[in-house]
Image 1 (spheres, rainbow, N blue to C red):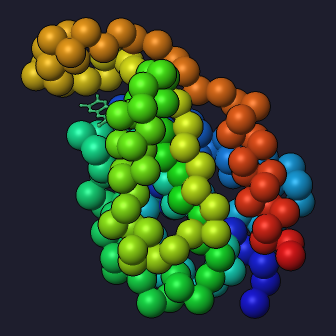
Image 2: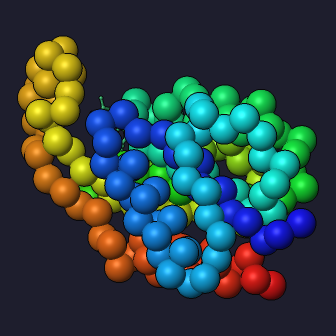
Image 3: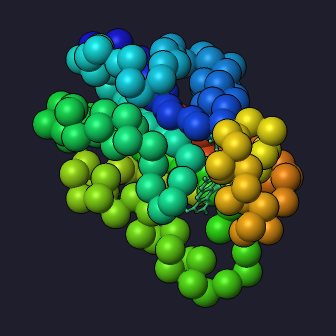
Length: 167
Ligand SMILES: Cc1cc2nc3c(=O)[nH]c(=O)nc-3n(C[C@H](O)[C@H](O)[C@H](O)COP(=O)(O)O)c2cc1C
């Protein structure tokens, strides 16, 4: 089997799509062969040795289709190198309870398939991308629009994944 990597992702308001695209382009720059697909569109994982799966945390979890991707491909993924990543905003808070929450975000996915690496990245809040109700909700929660994505940190993590793949 060729050492082909799949980046399977989900995103609700688009910013994690950009993170997944960035990861894929960094891997391509390293000479690796990469497919980038929304998790819901992946028909088979057979041709991949390594699978990176990621999505944003909304209300404490990944979007359903990302978790379903792990659930539906569980047995095959166990035979591969799997890395998880998430974007969220709790990482921007300097609170012990936020660290505890982050430990739990991917608990059920880790129980299905244990990843070799897990990357947690601060995400982006862009209320212009949200529907009316979510806009109001974010206003009530006093969530401010801001892009917290640290591209150097994301690059560092994907480089660690690439090194792991080559071993
Ligand atoms: C409705 C909603 C719920 C969210 N819930 C959480 C959460 O439980 N924990 C957290 O840390 N961030 C939460 N966030 C922040 C998102 O994880 C962050 O904005 C992410 O980067 C969005 O990615 P996306 O643009 O790919 O959807 C929430 C954002 C929204 C709009």
